Amino acid sequence: MLSFLWALIIGGIIGWIAGLILGRDIPGGVIGNIIAGFLGAWIGQAILGNWGPVVSDFAIIPALIGAIALVFIVSLVMKSMRKA
View (cartoon, rainbow, N blue to C red):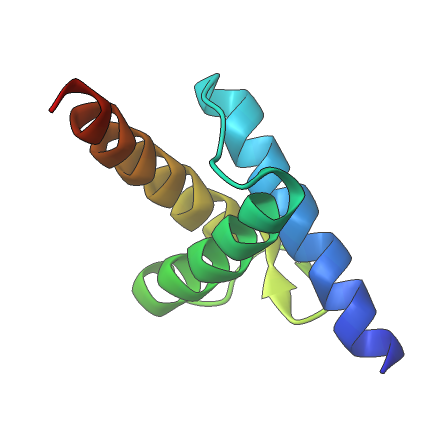
């Protein structure tokens, strides 16, 4: 149970940092940050592998790169949906 909570916290922080780096808001607030962190970690580790520092089963660097890519894509989709 504690490892699951720790994973939620780390996922949220990764999603939050990705949003800060890009200067874009993630829809959904804290929940959006957690989802972006988890999905970004999955994408980043699937493409780039598990290298760099690991915290709570997240390889931080690939997870952050994946989260940045995910936040960028989601923000583009949300922007195009607002214009339509």
